[in-house]
Amino acid sequence: MIDLIPFIFIVATLAVVSVLSDKVRIPYPILLVLVGLVIGFIPGLPLVELDPEVVFLLFLPPLLFRAGWNTSWPAFRAAIRPISRLSIGLVFLTTCAVAVAAHYFIPGMRWPVAFVLGAIVSPPDAVSATSIMKGTGLDKRVITILEGESLVNDASALIAYKYAVAAVMSSTFVLWKAGVQFLLVAAGGILVGTAVGYGFAYMMKRVRSNAMLEGTMSLLVPFISYPVAEAVGVSGVLAVVSTGLVTSWLSHEMFSHQGRTLVTSVWDMIEFLLNGAVFVLIGFQLSTIVHNTVEYSFADLIGYGLIVSAVVVMVRLLFIVPTAYFTDMLPTGEYRQRESGFDWKMAIVLSWTGMRGVVSLATAMAIPLVMENGKHFPYRKLILFVSFVVILVTLIGQGLSLPYLIRKLGIRSSGQEEAEEETRLRLLLANSSLDFIHDHFSETKMNPDVADQVRKLYELRSNWIKDKKYGTNRQAPGTADLLSQVVDAQLAVTQFKRDLLLRLHREASFSESAIKKMERELDLDEARLRSHV
Image: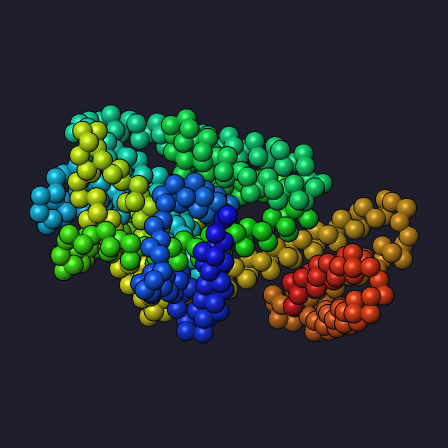
């Protein structure tokens, strides 16, 4: 019989912590980790060990796919140079720096083993960074770079990890061969992911009349892209990210309006559940890891962990600030840094967003137990503990201080630029719709009264947008107030209908299916109306 208690417990924990985080003003990922840490040490509870296969096959594909889907491909492409520097250059630099520190500070640790540790802790985590940054008001240019970095750096680190482990297992390593293999694996992953993305788009265009099928196919695609890429020996991470980016670019023509509404809602919930489960499970692991490292001095373990954490943090800081000064790492305007000079505040914030997460933990747990000669993999338990310390120091330490740092430096985005862009788009759509009504309806046999009512409605919307943009519209003063009253009146009627439906439901005057269908229509009406409030 399947034990559902852990699943129910994790979901209940997510619900409670998400409400609590709003009250205590702590990012919910950090609060989930802290709760997991506390629960993990409750006496009598069984030790929970996270299976790396579960992370790489169940958690990682949908989360990376969703992150890619939410990323703007034009913005990603425009910022490709700083993203590449961080996701490839900084990852490999961090791997080397940590390897040097581990080799010299941890007694007896050979270079190949030290590089394994470096590769494990080198990539900032996509899930951690994006979850903690939500609601911080961080400038969208920095968010674009961070999200782009987090989409690619896992692939760089996992490839470095693969060759470091191979060097430990076989004691052989050829740098130029590893470099060529890296390029082939990365390019192959991108090609596979792109092909899956376009195949997905092709299929979606042919099932647009079935919203349920659209939703089902969207859930399947990351679990096709990732394992197919891994099966042919290329990067599954880059494959699923590429699939997400292709989906982001083509989504406007792939889905029906019903399918887009359904898919967005379903993926929002899946993302919330998977993200939350990841952070709770990270917290759970400490008791298991401590239990497995009893042969080491706890003071030594903490010391090694803090040394590696300091290296990880300092390397990112010392890489980003000079790079941002001499290059276009932190773009402005059309992603051109040099137009307005060096922004040291953004550089500091960008350097402080290197939170590690579940990928580092799962990679450490995936280290083989024994080598080809039958001996135990050297320092495996120590690597696991040090990796967990790095995760805690960066996730909790940097995660808690990041919102304060953003406020202190005063680089929160006012949202004015985004609001103005939305207003311009609304005005363009409204005016273009008026032109369409004038040209199209005059050529058809539509009742003139109907055409006139539709025209007046869009004129009202156009004037309302102009009121909002310019303050007062000389052609129609008070239009914004008028339209607001119209929306308020429609919302009031919608609420009356809801109350009436509820009474009819209790009286069983109509069938449940009819009631639910009308309720769904009211939900859509209210969502549309509130988008204008």
